[in-house]
Image 1: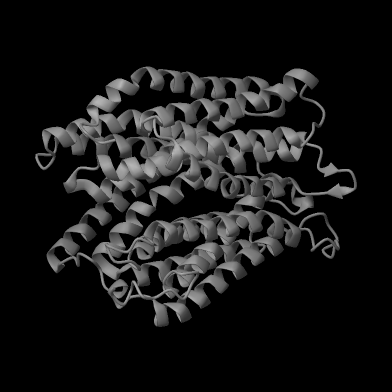
Image 2: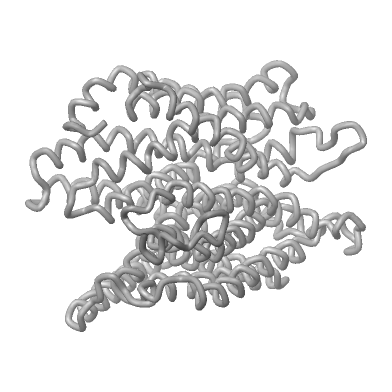
Length: 497
């Protein structure tokens, strides 16, 4: 037994897991705490503590924000592997995230909002993929505790995600005492998110010195000076190209938030297309690997549809919670933002159920079959949300149980798609593009949210029935098509089960 295998100080796991567990817990606390109230901050009237934005624009910004967070993980993984090493990359990311929340905590208006988005997008891209890779580095190849370690790590993510939408809105409303003189002081809530990330950084720094491997201090594949200069050249060219596009838009009077969001949507759709074409044409990819990449295309498309629905919890469902839901049960009153805790709550409840199911179901469906079932459940979660409008109209408020039911259904879908997708992505990846293929999984989420940034413009209380039905039916229909394609996809997977 090696030194790493004999370290059992944290629930039978390496002590370093506790450092990464709490780092990610606090990072998710800060991120989901901010997301729980950000939409309301953007479109609430200035007299209610908000920015007074148009609701449709605010919803589009929320969606493209989430898309950019996942796109930025591509850069974070590269910088870790080639320049800084994972430990420094995670630290720099955490600092940027904290600064982003601090900027939001200042009453500096729309400019502070955009500055915060930029800081948190880049910071999360640096931190998120590299914390996960550092968890894997705690274990030797033979260590059988690896899966359990990742399960504990994921539990930490969900603790932070669960607590934040309860505590941050509470802080933004004066801790229940109305100490601010108005219903909301969003900046106090954002301050709590900043404090959460600060606590994560402190324990990461102190614990990292003691318990994390020194291997994480250096890049896995250090870039040489010639390659670095070439990368810098292309980055400069990219920045100049973006500047020219923006200047051209400004020159014709089209430089506005909605058009910038449209450009980012195009980017989020074009990037995965580029990656698929690159892998399918690469001479480094064998015939069998090329077949597996083709099998991944419908899985990617299915994942994008699913993530588009799942990630709408902080956008469309948040609007429904605030505008159309009874925000009390008896004498117990709560904030619309508190509903964001349902996602991690159901994940924590359902994960052991599905782990048991996959361990004991001998003739379980293949990955494409699970994806197809997940898409149907995701579609049902939206069709379910059309029912209150159909039954009671769209002008009044309805029971909070409608939202609870919708989140329950979509989290069943997540159990069928998210962990399965991570696993099948690694299995179908060509040897020459293993890292890029994992990036494709993050891009599926980015693409789904980018499309959301466009279609959410059609949502309002008056159109909710049509909106939920249309999106839900599209998801269910694609799930049915996936069922019909299961055998063909399995053949293309060439021996991967």
